[in-house]
Image (cartoon, rainbow, N blue to C red):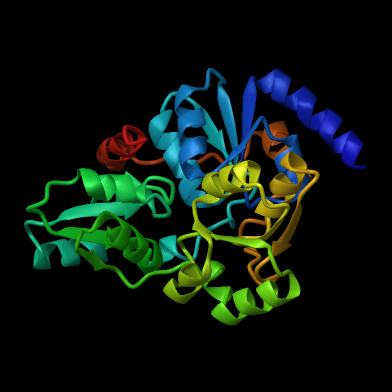
Length: 302
């Protein structure tokens, strides 16, 4: 069945001149079927430079919106319209405008895990891979509002030495990883290196050997002399880690770190999307123009 679906998917991809982008947290078979697998920053860059006519984006809604903003001449499709992001839903453009009114001189740093409307109200976007660098580049005399992820914002503020006003949003999946999970995993796998995502709570971050974005976690595990790792992020990343490092062993910090929204997409839905050209993602022009500026500033930061 899987082989048949993959054959059909490849035929449709060729016929539509389509490219398939998949996030590191997607199902294993979805990652394997994609042309590019990566984190939000990497996939944004791939979307910006693709020559394909159609982008099939296997992630959650804000990622497809970002691709549509960067590639207005492309057709951006998603396999399932219900693949949303709970954290992105924790702040609205109206709420952000109210916060900005309370701090009229502040600059807004918006985590890319947010809606297009929120990006349009922001000065610059960031990802977990470059949040620290984005804060470091902002004028020292400006207050900074960071939305919506308070955990990433706190981590980036500490690393950059900047004072940041945090919005009380968070990733439910990463917050399922508890400090006790790290302690128990260390006891079960003594000597293993603990690598976690900065969306985790501060007590989990404090127990880690390394803190990095999904792409950063891949790099840390590839370059480390260690042979065993405890991974504190969404469990979908373990598939790619095991593919790229077959001689090393990887354990999830918690099996509860499994995002149901990221797992909504399937091979069947990918085939249906390209077959019927369904579930296009579009962003209204006035919002897209403003949001594109914030995204482009993000892409200029290493």
